[in-house]
Image (cartoon, rainbow, N blue to C red; front, side, top):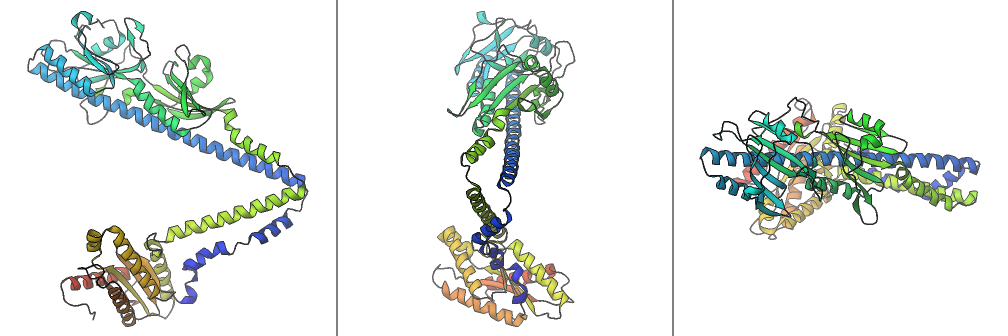
Length: 550
C-alpha cells in the first residue's frame, strides 16, 4: 500500500469527519433552507418530534417491561427448582430413616434440622397414608419448632391430599400458589404458599407416607418484585393473578419513596373486573395488549411444567376432578396517561418558550448544528473504538487484517511485488508481569508500541494482534530491507529498556516473509508463514543459538 493509497485506512482520515464540521456554515445553510412560512415549519417540526419521541419512549418502556417479566419468570422458576431439590433431599433423608427402621423421633429431629437450614418453608409435615399428620415442623418468624402430638391435624379432607394420595410413587405434586389455610380459614397475616409433596418410597408401610413442604411464596414474590422496583417506572402496576383470575398480589411504583406500594387484593378478581382482557390473557402464554386505558404485558408460569432433569421426579399431571390449572400470570400494566407523560412534559417546555419566527428559527438552527456535530463526534468515536487497540492506541487485529486484505488485493492487481510482512513477539513480558506487576507490563507494551510506531513510515501498517504480539506490513519494501528495519527497532527497544527489568532483557522476536505471487494466493498464506518464522526466531533465542537472522 503506497502512501497515496493508504488514506482510506488512515486513522487521521477517519477522524477528519469531525474536523470538517463547521457549525457556523451549518447554521447559515439551515437558515437558507427554512425560509418558509414559520407556522408551517413549526407545526411540521412539532408533530414529527412529538410522535418520534412518543414512539421511542413507548418502545423503550415496553422492552423494559418484557425484560422484567422474563427476569421474574426465570427467578420464580429457579426458586421452584430449588424447592424441588430441597424436597428431594428431605425425601432421601426420610427414606433412609425408614429403611433403617429408626424411631420417629429421629425423623422428626432430621426434619427440624432441615427446616433450620432452610428458612424458606412455612411448614414441613409428614402425613400418614390416611391423611393424618405424624410430624409437623412450624416456622414462626424464623423460629423452628416441632408440633406436639396433641396439636397434629387431620388433612384428609384437603383437596391437595386427595390428589397426592392418588399419585404413584416417584412423582411430585406442585400445588397452585395460594393463601395458606389453617383450620378451614385463610391464615392471617396472609401467607402465599406452594405445596410440594411426594410419597416416601421403601418406608416399609403398605401405603407410603407423604412428605409435604409448604414453600413460602411471599419471599419468592418479594424477590421478583424487586426487579420491578429497580426499574423505577412511573405508572406501572404489577400484579400476580392465579388461573381463576384472583389477585394474589398487586402493587404500584411510588416515585416519591422509590418503592412498590401494595394494594389490598383479597376480594378482587381480574377476570371479573376486565373479562375481555382476561379472556385474551388466558389463551396465550405471553403477549402484549394495547387498550384504551393502557398497555398490558403478561406471561404465564406453570409450576407443574418445571421438571428438572437432575432430580428423580416427574411432576404429577393427574387427570381427575380435583386437579386445577396451576398457571400464575405475571401482569405489568402501564397506564396510558403515563405513556404520554414524558413526551407531553417536553412539549410543554417547548410551548412555554414560544418566540417570534426569527428567534425560533435561530434556536432551531443552533439545535440542528449541535445535533449534527454531536452525531458526527459519536460516529467518529465509534469508528475509532472499532479499529483501535485501547491500550496502545494502535490499530487492532481486526482492522489490521482489513488493511492487509486491501494491500494484498492491490499487490495482485499491480506488478509491484515488493511487500514484506512481519510478526513481532515481545520477549520476557510474562516475567515482567509476574515480577513487576501488570501495570509495568502494560507500560512496557505501550512504550514498545510507541517505539515501533515512531520507527515506521506513516503508510506502513502496524497493529497489535494480541497480548504481546504485533503485525508489521511494509509496502514497497523487500524482505532484506524489512529485516534491517526490524533489527534497528529491536536494537532501539533493547537499549531503551536495558537494565530496567533485571534480570529480564527486553527485546522482541520477529519473523517475516516477502510476497511471492506464485506462493501466496491469499493473505492468510503470508500470515501463516510470517507467524511460523517469528516462532522459529523466538525458539532460537530461547535455545541460545543467536539472535541474527539469515
